[in-house]
Length: 274
Image (cartoon, rainbow, N blue to C red):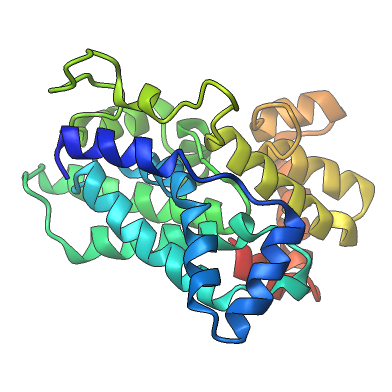
């Protein structure tokens, strides 16, 4: 899809109404019975969410249209495998499949530019760290979190990420005759578009339910560190200052909490959804 094709696609998928939890459950049950139309309905209602996820991966080697196509493949897999008995909303489950499909495509397709070897190595480390943080429950790791995990200066991380940018973004007008950013085409004047903030909010709610196996202090450290509340993610130092503890002590509490989660009965749920 070129710019014009994307514009038409965005308008088309914006026509599909979002589903209630009850509608998702009904469709999932019908899908289990082999109802192809139910599968198509569940997929169509969530196509716009794929765009929100795909936007995270622009400038990493694939055009936005390719990212969306790969994400849609993951969405179909999720719709076919969704277990409504788990109690989670469909999109919380589907996000994992969408991300995995996109990231696999990025790995499979070679880059069109060459970066210095040391810069490429750093980008690989950053990519792995970002994936690890997402697996631990951080919806969108920021440079501060990545730098802290790699024990690097945040400026080096930002510089590496900027050097890797080479694709026209969603907010560029391009050939759009109306000169409106493509991201605006997705907006519905009658209802707020379910953008990244909606995805993140749903993911936070699901993860926080799993955190109940932790003690109060452990839970607060994890919530603050990964930004699971309405606040932004905080560094170990900021959390330590707030709780009157050293940075090292906060790190120990965080690691202990994550270890508990990995070995708890909720481990499978966290792995499934993140």
